[in-house]
Length: 223
Image (cartoon, rainbow, N blue to C red):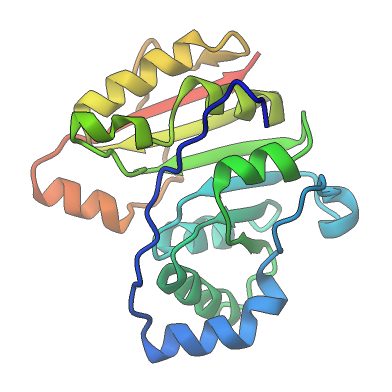
């Protein structure tokens, strides 16, 4: 990683309690669907026989991930998460729905992008409802910083996209400013995007809507 990029983790690992179903799925299916972190670029064509790779960062309990995978069987989704209950839940759903187009990486997304994802290789990147870290003193923990978006920009193929959604207005404007500042990316819309029809509603989105939060969407593509 660039020595000038001071990477602060955007998450805090807590001892989240796993249900018996999540624990069983995690223990029995992790070797089948989880790609171990390593400091070496993945060969998507060789590993998956698929070059239409979408990475989802922070999938929560995985409901949206599963729906997108079902509706786009020609795409391969690499879902990145660090919290085991969500990973266990997604593993159970993958097996139950016989989905062969989802793999999981259980590791820090910034490190994964830097160390495992080749340049000019991704079809798309999804970041749906990242932790807004709303207190000002915690803003340094936000995932979406210019340095990380520049890394993502390098990993996208030409004309491929990054799609972000949040229900926090301040964060939304901050993200828009960051995306606009990255030369390799261009906004498909004038500012915020319309909701793209294929994006499912997530559990975090439901919580935001119950609090009367507006949903802010951003959709940029690589020049």
